[in-house]
Length: 330
View: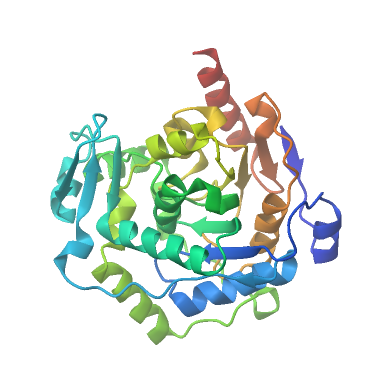
């Protein structure tokens, strides 16, 4: 287990790791709800400037084309699939035995992403999939793992099998996590940002598009830990790491850790004390860069692959380690 200090100097970040990648390698960023093509490009460009990348790859905005966009695909252990509406899928939480769930919208965007990488030359790319777009990323990687080199799942939805909404709220209330939802978020100072702040109109428009496209329902019903396990077992599996925040009320490090089929499915698990998503946070962008640019050496013990950035409380560290040790003893 390591504690990772964050340095403000980007040159220190590049010089502190062993980067072994082509100077022509592209990078992809997909941010989930509230991120359109332009905003994904802004963040991708910031990653490109900090890292050893030549360009970014992106796909067009999701355009809602009808009720099928909110359709959820349920894939069962025997390989069969069933399509259900988003509302029906929400009611099935805790009852449905599907090992993998994802939205029809994510499946379509995963196909678009694969096509974009192939059109760019088909060389392996590095990628950061944030929040609900982790579902899109996992679908694309599962289909074509050879197209990806290093992947970071940032505050990923899609791995956790959440309980029914009422039960989830009860659990969050009992644990005290529910209060985190209502606390005012600290605004990011202009000097600490790496992207242009969005206007209120832009935010509302992006969120409306995400809602119409079925993304918001997909954040609750997606459950792709089984797909992540299949990716890890493939011969061409990319180097895949997770970054999660101790303040994330739904996709917390604890929930993610408990949901993994096998701890060896990921090469690194990083816990931060910064809130969900990048959202222009320069310091968190630097955390992402440190994870992207780590060496490919993988230690056998998961305890050595569990890392904490500065600021994570000792109590939270102990909770994480307790879960790890319980899983390792099984």
